[in-house]
Image 1 (cartoon, rainbow, N blue to C red):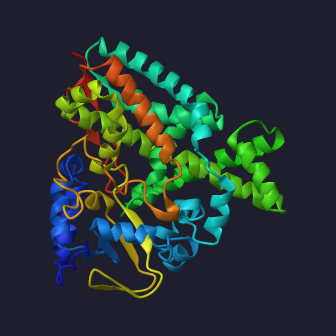
Image 2: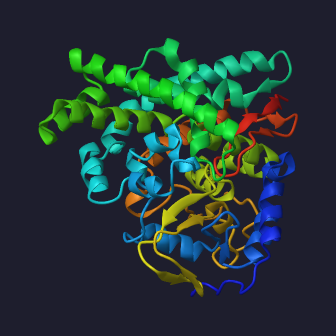
Image 3: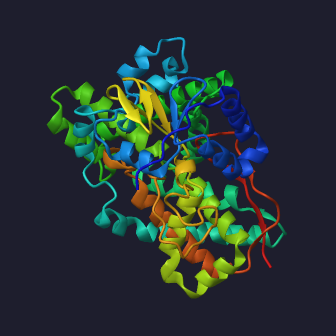
Length: 417
């Protein structure tokens, strides 16, 4: 099906109003009505701050899969000027990591990782994740005996940190600090971060840079059987300059870490929230555990951890009847696209029996490397919950962080029956 043409005239103030509403607590709790209004404005909508919003599933999918479209790399960020959000310390550092690299740099770095979370790797860490999930649910069950307990804080925030921390062989004593820094650092990747949010992100980036540079040097001095040591071995063969090799491995370690505590924790909390809000589906899943993977894909479609992905036009082009100039940024509104009625039947209905496809892990050459690990953590936790806590119910609506792009449930209070 061909995407529809964009609206010819869009009221700038109407778009500003939509995003103002989206930032409020009510908008965070349920962005779907706002997304519906945005979608009605057209497949391609001029953004009041510059660039364009892409709302249709087909156009978002095409752009993600088209290798000609660029990511906002370091050179693009530098062209925006030092006085913009792209010149912030946190932004320039993220501009050097894999998701912000274009070919040929992206190709070289991506190949150095190989199949990072392939079947062999996941097979080796599955039991570890199961042990962590059971331990966290034991603690959670203890808290439930006193009444309410916060699933987000006690389980969702913990499991991804334990999984990636153990895989990278980081000290457990560092987990709490690293998780907190990750939550602050992500603001630089938001759609329109405020000055105060960028300041938090900049400060967190400085601390994380120091931590992971030191980690690389530790593994350089005493290599072991861990990913960082293996990356050093790989990059020593690729890069004759040892400092350049160390720099490449530092950026890999930073990226792999940052990808875990944020998005996977959001997936886990959203999964529990949506299933407990649909108790009949939760009950059906207990009797049909083979559909756990389908349930996770529907959670990812219905409320993606990341609702916006940005790309840059490689040349003057036309999308949905709208002329987009070379070097102009487009925001792929995947949260909107995942509810596109032109692509999904009854998109506003949460249905775990749906064979859901979605854009929540991006697409093309920048498809999320950590997707297999996130799915493994979600399926492990959900399977354990179905077995151990079939009568959980939500006692209060979830509390969301004030964000637009990166979703985060900071509190999800539940009780046992």
